Length: 358
Image 1: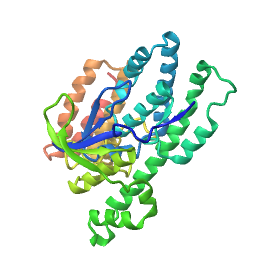
Image 2: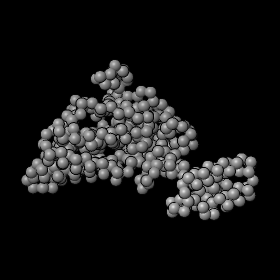
Image 3: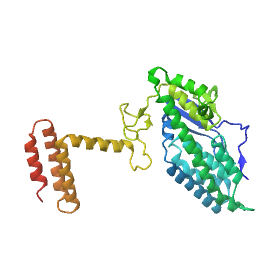
Image 4: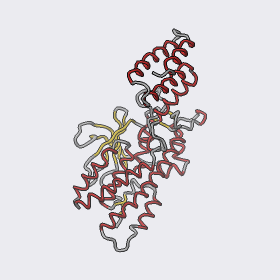
């Protein structure tokens, strides 16, 4: 019942090219998809992929499966189901090119019952799933659809395996300076020839040609045919090295990131597993706390601000009175830090205006 993807596929898994500092992936045709191109700043796809929260991905995949079941039971029509699934996953497609590839592969499995080993590259997981198949004797089509949720575990394990491979190579190639005696490209070359783990995931050969970036575009670029998701990732890694992409360690989570906007950014914009806010927001809060801890003027001002905010919430102070106090307090805080108002006078004003009830 479960098929293996045909080895002699007419189309590559994706076609990659660079344009204006962005890496583009044009995904190959599926029965449910004619053409799709997604792009992101070079390096960001690869670096971000390593830190995705697997529990979040599991929720996304489970929602796709539930939507598939509901659509099929409502109307068992291929085009109807495909359109319904597309509307479900559209919001996730721009998040990350590799996540998009796994989403397309899941849809392909649900619709075609095909295990695409160009994407599901963790062979032991795929082999085990194919051996087990669907755990029902003489199943009906409806039973098989219900059992398709079991493939999500295969996807999660394959993604986890790929994340580990990406994290390892980023550390080995990009972050291991070897006392500055080796270039990044030299480290990549050395790993290709000496590291067996590397050759398992990253040793790819690419076929390139000059062509139009899509059927409906006149833009001409050097295009690279990428047969597997491993090829996609290695293609991006090599382009990062060739184009000297700047990356940093986030001062909050410690993970690699590609600065966006300001080049002096020290925090990434990712929401790491177990967190509710992005590192940039957490970092800004930590910086503010550190500033207040080392600056008595800021600390006193903040305590008074919080005190009066609570008073407003409890109904002991009018909002308009608080707004008036807030504006004056900011001015006096800034005057004190600039040396135009003595610290003692600032403290006396704060005590007088924030500790008495209005």
